[in-house]
Each structure stands twice: as structure tokens, then as C-alpha cells.
Amino acid sequence: MERVILHSDLNNFYASVECLYKPELRDRPVAVGGDVEARHGIILAKNYHAKKYGIITGEALWQARQKCKDLIVLPPDYKKYLKFSKLARDIYADYTDRVESFGLDENWLDITGSVHLFGDGKKVADEIRERIKFELSITASVGVSFNKIFAKLGSDIKKPDATTVITRENFKEVVWNLPVNELLYVGRSTHKKLRGYGIKTIGDLANTPVKYLEYWLGKWGYMLWTFANGYDTSPVSNIAAKSFIKSIGNSTTAPRDLVSNDDVKITVYVLSESVAARLRLNGFKCNTVQIYVRDNGLESFERQGELEMPTSNSDVIAKKALDLFEKNYNWDKPIRSMGVRACNLVLTGDTQMSFLPEYIKEQKEDALERAVDDIRRRFGHYSIGRGLMLCDSRLSNLNPKDDHVIFPISYL
Amino acid sequence: MSRKVFVSVFANFDTEGRITPLSFKWEDDRIFEIDKITNVCKAASLKAGGAGIRYTCMVCGKQIYLFLEDNKWFVEGK
Ligand SMILES: [Mg+2]
Image 1 (cartoon, chains in turn blue, purple):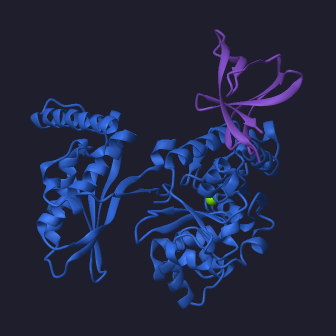
Image 2: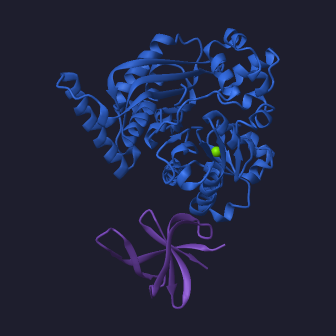
């Protein structure tokens, strides 16, 4: 049986949610910006009024403000976005239990099994859009197709508030003329390579002999070729809401350049405490710690290392991060920014129980950290802290920036 | 455009877990009886800015929307 797959994309998601709660801003250019106060803030999302000024996601706030001096920039409120993301998924769940998230604002739905109940793909897509608009005041664009790749392409073709149907009969007209980088997973470097071989459109890719693509791009070449030809058969998996947070990281551009291991130690502990607190808040532990270092010549690198057992303890994370740092940095230059990231997450409830002494120690430290969380929640962040933080209050007062990295899960 | 006015609500919780608002207290402490509920659905309030469960209520012969969002109730004020 031919599959019926929908890809629903909430339009200008963060900005739409903000504008619902701030009616007075709806007719003005509004953006959601990361780290609004700092010198390295960027645009995370914008509404259509801001789009008219040519403001693009990912650009620096100062650049955006040059394009539109009246731009209103709001800080992100992930709690609200998670809530609306969940509300949208509740709507999808009325049509199928096969819903796969791709970030907070995009989902695939496999409705093959329910078309006899609710009508064909377009009818369900239109109904879902109407409900999202009525219940959440957000518009969505929905692609309908026989595979996930074309469904996703379909949701990008017409925005906002539209349904695009891509069938076996029309996909060559609808899809093949699109630029090849519109295809999922054709990133910047693949795009550059493909352009080098004269492949400009998705149709060009589809009609290139697959052995060339494999030769140029390895197994990705084969995969992209199947995508372009509509041969993708990957299933819509049922992925729970929590699992879209694949890693939790904090990074900061230091108030002054870091020049010694002691400076780095303070910074790493501030970042690790924040990462660990957010792990606990979301019910996660991590198996891997990653650091990011950028020097004042703007050279940067990342390193990661495995932990012996999953943790949400700031001391364990910080020690791992410092260990990675000391092994990989020789102080050629002072450091401008640093990040600490917890990856390879598991839900706290899923970790193995054990009577090993390390495990018991970890549990005690966990209780200690939770007590600190509690004190901070009640009396403020600076009501309790490590002695280390008093060594240089300028460094320890920095405000680490939240950056949830929300990775697509399928295919990777 | 209108205001989001949070109100305290007197409600009945039945044994099935259904919530039926009976009356609410306005900002100036006046209490308004809800004579009839004509519809209940999930909805966004563009006027007040919010989204939740919307009760369409008859109050003093007029139709108003009473919203329940995250355990707080609000109406679309003037
Ligand atoms: Mg979107």
C-alpha cells in the first residue's frame, strides 16, 4: 500500500508564540534573539514583518538592527515553546500514533493507517492546519507525499499556512527543478561539491549515475540519490517529546580573555554547573562531555571524551572538561570563548543501579547538588557557590547562555 | 485589541475529572454567575494573548469566553 506521510512545519515558530502572548507586537517587526545583551547575540527566529526587512535566522543582532532599526528583539522562552510543541503533537496524535519530531516545530506523521477514517492526505493536512491555527494561533505549512523526504520538501514549497501535495505523478515537475540544496541533508559542503560537478537541481542529482555519486560522496552519495528519486523508504518512527533534546550545552564569550589554567577552571566550573543543573532539570544524565574553545585569533576546536558512568554532577563534568582542555591546549594564544556540552544523554530513570562504591559516592554527590539547586531556586543563584568563584568575580559572574541543541534523529 | 484579565473562578470538579466553572470574580471583586456553558473547546485567544481550554459562557445575557490555561483562568477584557 502506498504510504501517506505528512510533514508539518510550524511557521516562524518562536516568533509566532511570542506574538500570541504580546498582541501589541503583532503588527511590528519582531525577532527572537539568543543572548540579546551580549556582543555575540544572533537571530533565532523572526516574524513576517521582520522578514520583509531581509532579516535572516542566524545573523548577528547588530546586523539585523542595521536592516531594521525598530526591530523588537525578545529573549527566547524555551519553556513556552516546548509547551506549544507538545500541544501541536497532541493534535497530530488525534490522527496517528506515528509521529516523529524533527526539532521543536517540525514533525512527520504517517497516516497511512488512518486515511480510511479521516480522508486523504490533503484533507487531513488541511484539517490539521485549521486546528493548529484555531487552537494555537500558529500557522503551519504541510507537505503530503509518499515518503518523508518529499513530504519535508513539500512543507517548504509554500508558506505560510498552505498544503503542498507531491505525488508519484507530479514529483518530477514539483521537485526536480528545485535547487539541490533544498534537499534534506545537502549541507553547505555537499552543496559545494555537487556544484563543482555541475549538479544544480534535485533533478540533476536524480539523473546522475549513482556510481559517480558514491565515488564523490561515499555512502551519502547513494542516500542522496535515493532521496532525489523518491526511493526513500525510511519509516516515521515514534519519538517521544523529551528525546529531541540530544545534548545540553552552555557557552560563553568571557568578559575578558582567559590567560591561564586558573581562568579556564573558573569558566569551566560556571559552565559545568549550569549544564549539570539543566541536565537535572530535564531528567537527564550524560555519557560524554564535549568542550569548545576559541582563541582570540578566532581559531576554534572541539574535543570530547567519554565518562565512566552517566552523570548529572557538575564536578564530574567540570573535571572531564578540564582534563580535555589541558590535554589539547598549549596556550599559544589567550582564549576568547568556551563551551561545555553534555552529550549522549540518557534519562535519569534508565541508568543502571549498582552497589559499587563509585555509584554510592555519585548518589551522595547528586543529593548534594540537588540541595544546592534547591537553595538557589529559593534564595537566588549567588546565595551559595564554590570558593573558587571568589577568586575572580568578574569571570565567575558571567551568565552562561543556554543552547539546547536539537538534532534530527532519523538517518543519523 | 483587548486585555488579558485573570480571574478567580469557582468551579465544580466532577467524579470524571470534568471541570465546570460556575462563577468568577472580576478585578473589582464583583462576582458574576455563569448562567450557561454553550461550548467547550481548545482555542487560542488572539485578543487577550493565550491558548488553552475555552468555555463559551452566558453571563448576564451576554456571551463571553472564559479560558483555562496552565491552571489559570482569564477572560478577554475591554
Ligand atoms: Mg518552522
